[in-house]
Image (tube, rainbow, N blue to C red; front, side, top):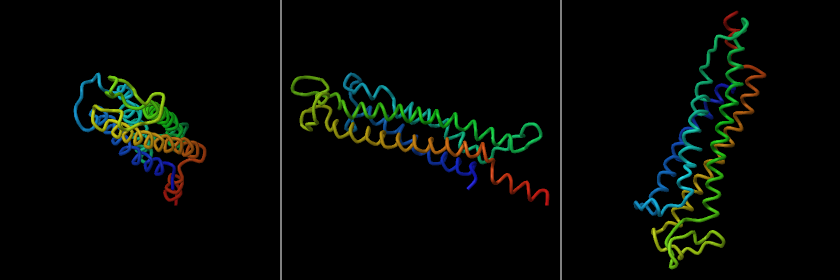
Length: 194
């Protein structure tokens, strides 16, 4: 498979993942599926790991990867493949942006899972699980906030890791495309001269 076509597959894979991450982060604002006062939300929800990190920042590499297959740069110094090689090389920068965005989402998710949700206990509003294991019954309000936060932050963690791996794969693919050129371009050039 040509490096450009492979990058397009990666871009197609990143788009739905980023949409799911944005939706998960939005759902975190409604613990248990009900609206609550903003003071009753965990701090990590406000870090927007799913919206900014795995969402908006992931759109840039996804769109760049999608465009690499059809990249018909004019080339440089009379060499038509030079433009494609440069495009593959520049995709490495966007893949790095994707790794940073996914990494941010992963770090926020890990911190949120470790700290636990902010909820009302018999002692008032606090982070009851910050320094000990989860005791599901400690959170009285919002209802099901423990399950809600753990589930959604776990999804954000898993998808962030997948996104980071896909962007890291594009770094290798971009290097191969920059060094070896576009395999499809070579076959087209051979057909044109025949």
